[in-house]
Amino acid sequence: MRKNGLVIAIDGTAGTGKSTVGKAVAQKLGYGFLSTGELYRALAYKVYEQHVAPSDGEAVLALAKRLKFTFVRQADAKLNLHVDGEYLGGKLHLEEVGNVASQVSTHKEARAVLTEQMRQAGKDGGIIMEGRDIGTVVFPDADVKIYMTASAQERAKRRVKQLEEAGEHPDYHKILALIEERDYRDSHRAASPLKPAEGAIIIDTSSLTQDEVIALVLEKISHYVA
Ligand code: DC
Image (cartoon, rainbow, N blue to C red; front, top):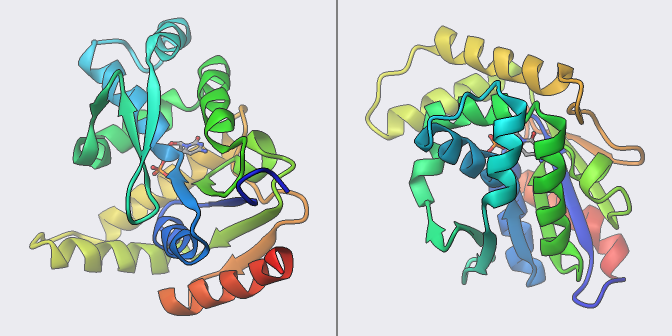
């Protein structure tokens, strides 16, 4: 085991509850929690801000190399990402930023730069990292690997509920189409496509509540922390 504990990888498609579950489990274990999509989102944000074309691999790579990432641990276990000293916060979670993130994340060389940052953040252990390629590429030697899935229909329903609770009037079919499009792009790209790591514990969350998933993950991990 590393100095501060285990490295726990949680991968899976968007909208399966990886972040909520990962953060809750990290709190229970006293670990840090890193949502690695935020690094891709931060790069996307800078790409957009600096008028770089998301399809221009060389320009995206040059920008990725120039950015300075730091992680600041919060009381709720979350590692907040700061880019060049600035916390970008909610801006990273705009729908548009997510879309550009999915595009910039197709560039292999830029991925390597962000992957190195993730490895630095996790090298001493005591961390849960959530993403798409944590168990396959970032930490192939992670102590525990979890792969979360749920049907696209169930994830679209959850997203609609979330947006309705925020006072919006989303169209279920549009949301479903966006989810399917993103799944396809994330799992068919040439560089580090989304797929379960070898030896990953696969959890289908379609018919489970969040609390049930948290309990299940804690139960699986208990075999390693004992
Ligand atoms: O999990 P998220 O929605 O915040 O991720 C945003 C994008 O970043 C997603 O479309 C795929 C990419 N991503 C990735 O390629 N590898 C990761 N480890 C995390 C995210």
